[in-house]
Image (cartoon, rainbow, N blue to C red; front, side, top):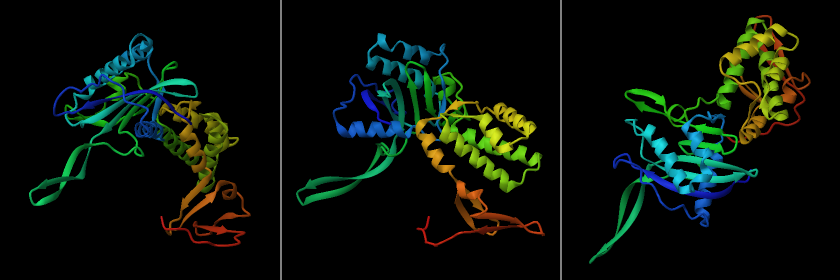
Length: 337
């Protein structure tokens, strides 16, 4: 998905010197390395760990975004950073960092992003000279930034009109207690579960319900994987009805128990999926990875996993399982992982 950067500004937060150093001028987006860095950080903000939600309209952050036409971009960035720093500074361990505030377009929609990139320590050389010639020194630099290929430590991206957001947040120590602060004190809105959290709840709950109704483990595992792969491929949302029906077939009681429990644990039916994560997950769940008790691991395409012409699971008299792989024309070696 193409991102069109419109404006960006950089603010510095040095915890040792006190309040943020707020820039009064935007970054020069005509410089390719700046555009490249910001675009990569924005794209990296969408991941299976990203929390999603919609801002509460009465929150101060929602008010700031809704008033964006009444103030300059620079002023808006100051207000947002000041709101963020009021919460951040209360932590006794939260590190120094740079904050990028960005306005961009995607699919003809306006977005704002706050990207927090922590300082990292690195080494560089320094060339000095005296009457005897050049001196090459090794220096420690304590305020370097991570590469564009790495995601920001924390990020907040919001669609300006709908107030729908994506959030990556970390826990820090506040008065001796490790906790998050971004969702609770900055945007003042409880996010939905991340995609990764949703999938873990769905898988664990399906396994629990399946065990209760004595569904064979091999069949259940395949059904869960297959249902997830199909819902990702066909829909823009997580469809709990579709997953329940595919996993538990005609067992209406099991379907209802599954849906009730996952919703109690925070999974939202028909929750929208982040586009990049949807594409990644469609590929991931199109294959079934199994590990046998003897240490053998297999990765099998889902269309073959349930087909006895290719893979057969045989229950032995002693309770153990045998796996037979069929119709193999050639065996090739892969690179070590």
